[in-house]
Length: 60
Image 1 (cartoon, helix red, strand yellow):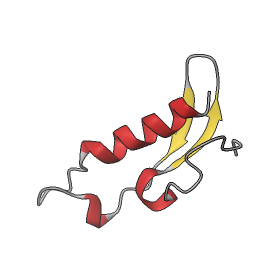
Image 2: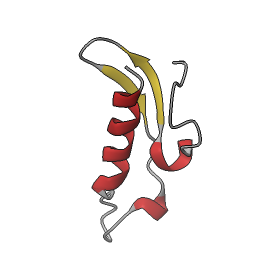
Image 3: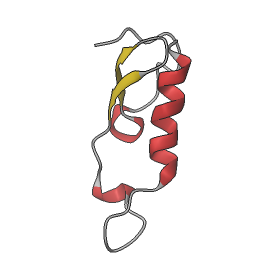
């Protein structure tokens, strides 16, 4: 697992977690929860995926 530099209070359940950060890529994990869905088909709100991307970007 990657050592977190900032955003240490971000919820892994809502924002996910950064596994690895390289120069131009990051490996991340986000478990989709039922409460994240914005429609009856289970589409996850983009804010959750954006939040994970933001978290990974801050760890560079």
